[in-house]
Length: 204
Image 1: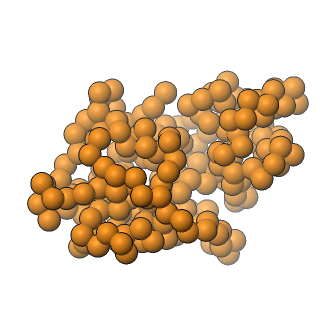
Image 2 (image 1 turned 90 degrees about the horizontal axis):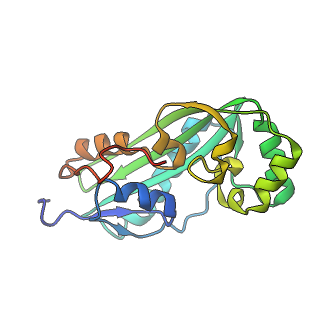
C-alpha cells in the first residue's frame, strides 16, 4: 500500500474523536461501526476497552480489507466498577455522586486493523473530581452534556468545572489518545501523519 492509495477510516461517529483526529490529518473517512457494545464483566476494564475497540475496527475492516481502520472505546472506572454512558437522569446522578471527590481512571482502547496486521492498546489517564454538591450535579445534568458520555461528563466541555486535576493524555480522556494512535499507525506501516494546527495532541 503506497502513500497515495492508503486510506484511513475512523470506525466511530463520535464528534469528539472526529475532531481529535482532525488535529493531525483531514485525510480520513468516517464509517461508524454498528456492533452492539457489550462488556464482559469477567475481564478487567483495560481488557474490555481493547476488546471493544477491536470488535468495532474489525466489523468495519471486513468491508475495507485494503485500508487502515481505527476502532476506539472509552471506559470510566472506579474501584474496578465500569461507568458507561448513563441510561437516564437518575443513572447520571448516581455516577456523578460516585465520582465526586474521588480519583478515577479513564481507559481508551484503540485498535488499528490494517492489510498487514492488527494492533491494539489500552491507554490510561487519571482524573480527580472535586467534591460536588447535589445542586452542581443537578445543574450539570440539566445541560444534557453528560447523557452521551462515558462516566457522565466531558472534560473538554461544561464538565470541566468538576475536574480538580488529571494526569496522562488529555486526548485519551476525551476519547482518542492521539500520540499513541500515531505510534500504532506507524507500526502498521501507515504513512506518517502530520501535526495539526495546534501543534499538540490534546484538546481543550
